[in-house]
Image (cartoon, rainbow, N blue to C red; front, side):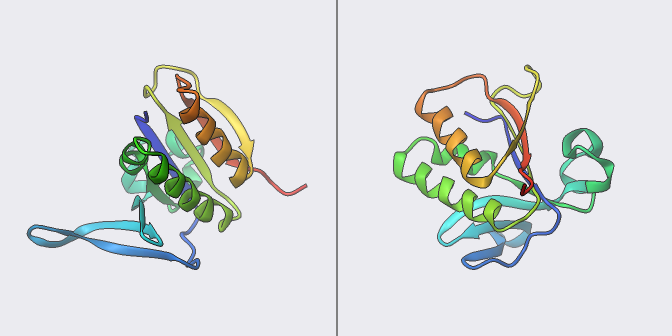
Length: 151
């Protein structure tokens, strides 16, 4: 479903039910860190400057190089195969987005093949959009959304 699914936040805040855990491989702990919301593994956590060679293009501004990238593609694709897992994934995503005042989300089903629609959304609206895309098998998916500023 997704070739790209990234959430960028200025700083990952310590929210209730949020836990960042070091990855354990067959050889022990490695440098990868994963974000969990309750029991749901949501994303691989990396600095934006590590995640993207061209920070300005991917993050919308070179000033965001010190932001945190949450790379959700693998977890989203796994969750999208099952209704219960997808609902849990979307709830975990809503928790992260609602807990941060500022964020940017990029989703693409076929990376760099279609123009990205630019959206300004609330956390609830973004989660509803993602739910509708899965429910209707909407393709292509090509957007970036920034947190909607309070009016």
